[in-house]
Structures are given as C-alpha cells and as structure tokens.
Length: 98
Image 1 (cartoon, one colour):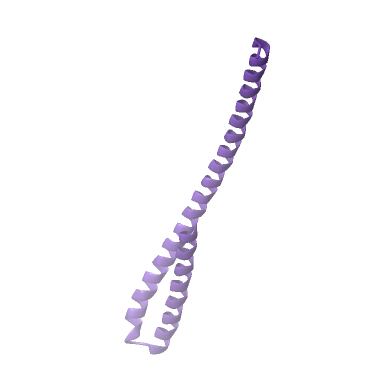
Image 2 (tube, one colour):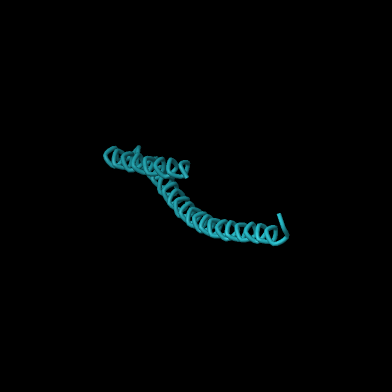
C-alpha cells in the first residue's frame, strides 16, 4: 500500500468517526430531552401523590371526629377515603413503572 492509499484510508476512517460522533451527539441530546420530560412528569406525579396524601390525612381526621356523631357521614367519608387510597395506589404504581 502506497502513501496515497494510506492517506485515503485514514481520511475515510476519520470521516466515519466524525459521522459516528455526530450521530452519538444527536442521540445524546434526544436522550437528555427525554430524561428532562420524564423528570418533569415524575415531579408532577409526585405532586399529585402529595396532594392526595394530604386529602387522605384530612379525610381521616374528619372521619375520626365524625364517627362517633354521625354514622351516615362516616360512611360517605369512608368511601371518599377508599377512593383517595385507590388514586394514590394508581399513582404509586405508575411511578414504579417509570
């Protein structure tokens, strides 16, 4: 192999490396954007879990105070608590899948 062929071979390899680098940079940028979006969604879901947890705690306190006084209201609160618990469980399940 003469010097011209060697230079051509090296030039070809350099071009391939540049193309690979550019492709990897694009992939990296796309992955970073996906990561940013997923973190934002996780933050949003965490906020929803926190809000539901707060509602649950409030409902539990109200339920405790109502239990002895009004059995009908107590049943309604119990149903509401069960709905909140179900929503929280769905959020937690979603978070575990991410």
